[in-house]
Length: 282
Image 1 (cartoon, rainbow, N blue to C red):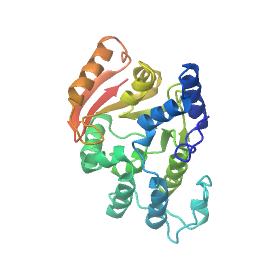
Image 2 (image 1 turned 45 degrees about the horizontal axis):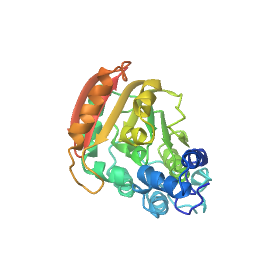
Image 3 (image 1 turned 180 degrees about the vertical axis):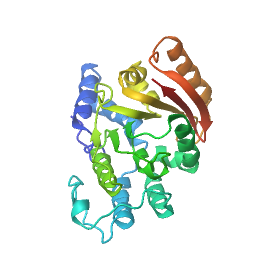
């Protein structure tokens, strides 16, 4: 098993699967190989103290009197027991400032942040109001709820491999008067079955494809959603442009031509900031 401080908060079934796969390959050091894979899919995006900082921002931004964070951040009901109340769900600047500060702590959402208004305006233009959302491999993207172009959101299902992210998001959802609907999944072998209006797969397909070829589009096909948003990065985390947009667009078109996304029609696509965004409809 992979027992390190950096990865011990990840979803146990995922850790077990990756270690078993590397062990079965017969390499000299399966633990080292497993850690390399985990860095590619997780470690490169989140700094070690990001969750601790996010908890502090939630305490200061969404609670009247603050609350004592549980050391392992698993008691999500603590936020309800210590005087927390939601911000208004209108265009409240303070709310957006709080979530923006939190989103800066995750590399993926940090680079989306300058274009977040345009990102959600583009999506909302094609999906309209939605009541249920699913966010796969979500990271800190669900904190963008105040930016959504919708007025009747009832549930936001968020799936990640980091148990700390799951718990922090559930605290945040309480502050937004939403159900605690964040959980962990190993998306290589598990497909969430909730029926939703809109599903996000933000920069997720390349990560899944690197782990298991074909899984990204297979997962998309298995989802029970009316609208699907698939995005790709246009630059590396280091900010380098390696022709990624052209390569990913070609990959997407080939998959579509091969029938890998035949349950969806493409409504629109656009480059927004450092992201190539596709909006599809079932």
